[in-house]
Amino acid sequence: MNEVWELRREVMYPAETISCVQLPDDDRGVHLGLYDSNMLVSVISFFIVNEELQFRKFATKSVAQRKGYGSALLDRVFEIARNEGCRSVWCNARRNVSTFYRKWGMSETGNHWVKQGIEFVVMKKIMSMEIIPAIDIIEGKCVRLTEGDYSQKKIYNEHPLEVAKQFEDAGLGRLHLVDLDGARTGAVKNWKVLETIAGKTSLIIDFGGGIKTEKDAGIILNSGAAYATVGSIAVKDEPEFVHWLAHFGPEKFLLGADVKEEKIAVGGWLETTDIQVYDFIQKYIDHGIQQIFCTDVSKDGKLEGPATELYKKIIGTFPKLHFIASGGVSEMKDVETLQKIGCTGVIIGKAIYENRISLAQLQKFKDEHS
Image (spheres, rainbow, N blue to C red):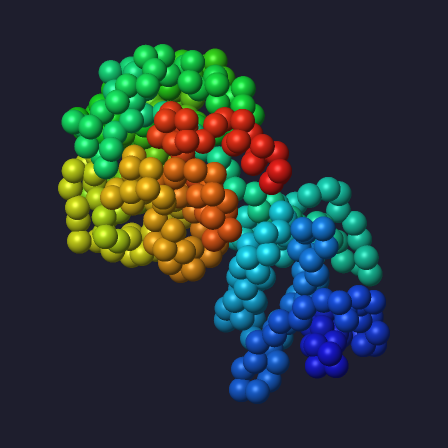
């Protein structure tokens, strides 16, 4: 511990004695560190109490800052939090570095305070996974396809608003609304359904399918969608999509990565490209995209379980990404597994409509993990 204490003191309170950075519960914590040329350059300590992980005394030598050491340690802490089933991760942070923690989805919580002339704030991230029910629309009706095949269509309800209200009544806060007519024709068709649901529920809606122009994106966002869901345009016309990101802001888009054998599929899943999903995701993270959902087309609508191994690889590659799983969920065990591997959201469609998963089960899961 002496080495840990000395690094804490050097970085955090160089004018104080080492006792200033010794914690009374240090012997009950876990202490992680990284070395460079046999020199300890970054440390972090964490404590898990009542399913909450608190990390403390996070310090990196000045000569080692901006080299990824601290980020690597924090990535590891969040991985441990997921593996241990923690409901939240938090820390008392110096307010002038709060932007750093926001990269991991942490937010300021509560009031600020000052200690030894330094302003602090609690930064916290709730680790619960968002449950996002899906409504797919063809000719204004609620349907589901199997493997993206329009010939394998089943109508579940002729009034999507009724379905949306059922989700809202179950305490679910989001909705994934897909215009399958738009996806097939390349032009938004069912935006009136969006307008109706947005006007008559409080659901946070992402809407996709057929968004091909900046005007389309504007119509969707002005019709009540919190996010415009895009996929094909990001593959086929990167400059145009990047222009949209600059115009509307990347936070207004949910990027869909539809995949067949780890390669991107477009056009309502009717066409497979040679683009690796990892290259695709990295490209748009670099452009500011904050959340992505991934659908393994071979799993979608078949109720055979989600593409867990693929999702593990993506989350491991992009640990800071707000990653949403989609396709294949058939039972609550799948939902629990996706949360455990680190998904921050899951889109569920057919399993709800085929009564494999009840809204009561989803509401219970949400209540237990919020």
